[in-house]
Amino acid sequence: MADTVREIERKYEVPDGGRLPDLTGAAGVAEVVDRGTATLDATYYDTADQRLAAHGVTLRRRTGGGDAGWHLKLPAGPDARDEIRAPLSDTLPAELAALVRSRVRDAELVPLVRLLSERDVRHLLDTDGALLAELSADRVTARRLTPEPGEPVRWTEVEVELAPGGDPALLDALESHLTRGGVRRAAAASKLARALAETAGAGEKVKVGAGAKTGAAAEATAGDIVLDYVRAQIAAVVALDPAVRLEVPDSVHRMRVATRRLRSAFRSFREVLDRAATDPLADELKWLAGELGIDRDREVLTARLEERLRELPDELRAGPVAARLGAWARERQGGTRDRLLGVLDGDRCLALLNALDALSADPPLRPAAARPPEDVLVEAVERDYRRLAALVTTALAAPPGQDRDLAMHEARKAAKRARYAAEAARPALGRPAKAFADLMTGLQELLGDHQDSCVARRALRELAEQAHAAGESAFAFGVMYGREEALAARREAELPALWAEASREKHRAALRRRPRRTAPRR
Image 1 (tube, rainbow, N blue to C red):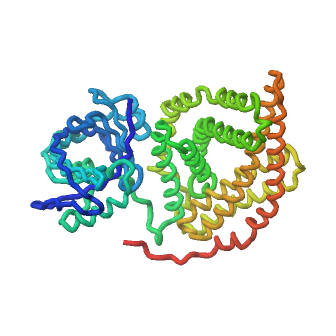
Image 2: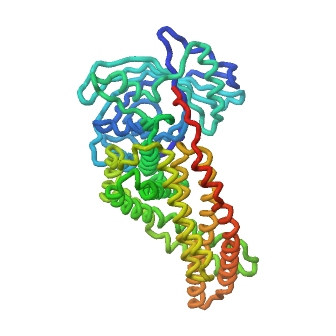
Image 3: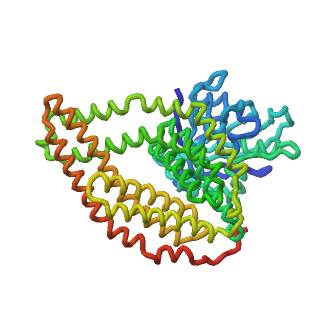
């Protein structure tokens, strides 16, 4: 069974002949305790073209020390990585293989680098003897294994790892003492990154970390801006796959949003990317978003109904009302997670990821991609706005009931698309694009709350019918229905004023103003 540990650490290089300063008294360190020396032997695995390294991911099998086994490290923010550990075995555990699947696809994992480390460990303790951080001095010997064994390289490296639950500010305080002693921050993000760089063969391109963006701000074309956005969403879909498998909170929602942003970009920027190539991908992204949405929509709906139940007086919540709602939610939940994992492991999802990579590597650009971004992106945002305006007009004119509900639902989807287009255009259009996106977000949230109320009322009718058939009182569900109905009516009443503000000409005029072009930073 794999365990996950959040690792917050910094790495430093020790110059030849350099010595570590005594950290006693530094940043609340009351005592430095020598914990001895360990010999660590780690073999790092990757594809032959280093797909894991390109994403800042490391996978190793390590012996020695107190945590021998298989370790998968995933980026988790500045100085932070999530380390997923599995017991030592001869072959890669299936649970770790699944977590790298979105990056590895159907390529073979091969032993890439072997690292031998002689590690001196010291514990930094506070006045109560509690662990603040662990300081490790590693004498490293690295040897490339693939494509063929090479000559070893050697260096000395220091790691300072924060104790679980520790304050990251401690790392800043300790760093000032280390640097005064002649130690400097490591240029490489990991031992593997340094080993790959220093053992690379002639002409070999080392892939470490995320790639640079397409173009500098002062020279970017419309195609550059759109491709940066599209590639960021593709990267999010790939990176969130292991988070979804690990059940990281909100990961399913964020992955679904990335698929929607991609679909929206393909439609909004059809003057930049050829829809003959992007439409089939948009269809597959819609399928994936639907699969991701099964769990997410159920969770949102259940939470909403539970909130309505908590609003009821105690006397209305008495009896089997809560039990019936709980049973209804569990019935809808059955098997959805296994289904989602099956989707992520399936050939269809793998083919979609490969197709997205192919589009990123060889984008189907149209002539407008070479134009300055301001003209093309403003046209795209305004086109999405006009579509939204027509749908909101239809919704406002529709009589109360199903026709208005459907019209507001369509307007919600259009508001989301206009928001995404403005967000994608922000690098070129600046603050006006952010302001416009914020307006669209407010409109989307109002319309979304209305749609959630429609869905909740359908569920409450179903629950009331079940209660009635079982000989139970359905009154509580009726009260909850009435409150949802009143909420939806309030949202309908709020729409005209919100739309009057969102549709003011000044917001779109601001988009058309040309921002001052600045030279790119060097």
